Image (cartoon, rainbow, N blue to C red; front, top):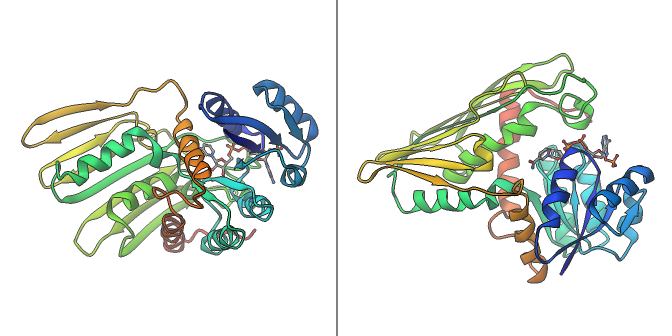
Length: 323
Ligand SMILES: NC(=O)c1ccc[n+]([C@@H]2O[C@H](COP(=O)([O-])OP(=O)(O)OC[C@H]3O[C@@H](n4cnc5c(N)ncnc54)[C@H](OP(=O)(O)O)[C@@H]3O)[C@@H](O)[C@H]2O)c1
């Protein structure tokens, strides 16, 4: 059994806790909040035995094997390093940090303390993602020529909320643009050239970013994210022999259509009864039980590659953080 702690009691922490309850071999053992009352209420809601009123108290306890960091982006590095330094394994929400310096520092801390660390890029562990990669690897759509993906929703209007607050690492690219970037990286690797433009909102963060990855082979990935409207939230992967259309919301990989020139249309469906966080939880459990420090399907190198892509996209679009 793997004993889990949850750090932070916001929106995603609740969804994660619900899925955690359904994972065989995972015990929801503790929760930590900056507020003792919030920790207590969260613990009661999910039948968690230990509630800590500070993140430090949980780090000092012997109650957990791994923690899930569910704080805003700006806090990921300090929260993650706190637990790693106490030799507690960490699954840290995406993006792993604000930039490459932070990502490298966190990975260095994991190495130094010989402790498991993974960025919670949950899409990578969805059954649909495994099936997608198998189809591409089998050559069903031939050589990839073009990728497009978008992720947009109407975000909170509150300028202090983490999605719009620059001090908490707000902005569309880091929050949701990471998913189109991830898809292009997963299929095509690190791009040779990146060009991006963004629209900034009243708080100074990007509310929309339009970005293109180009590869020396001539392939392009046209990517888009926005907090201003709901978009199709779909992705297309076009190859010389066919294409794949991933249905909305593509980063949850609920279903996709394969158009294969030989066999025609085929629908692949991946129904689930959970939010979908159970797959990454199971992946982390396996690593902890097998004493692995990183997951082979989303390695430290993958996280730094993706972060380097996000840094280059930000540079091209003129997105800066001053935390
Ligand atoms: N994988 C996914 O599907 C997904 C979806 C949404 C969000 N996320 C990621 O999860 C993280 C949290 O997102 P969220 O939507 O859950 O945010 P949220 O609702 O604002 O919750 C964040 C929590 O972090 C804690 N926190 C620690 N330091 C904080 C600070 N300085 N300011 C504000 N809160 C602080 C708070 O919990 P306490 O007060 O209890 O300490 C707060 O409730 C983000 O990095 C985001 O990218 C992932």
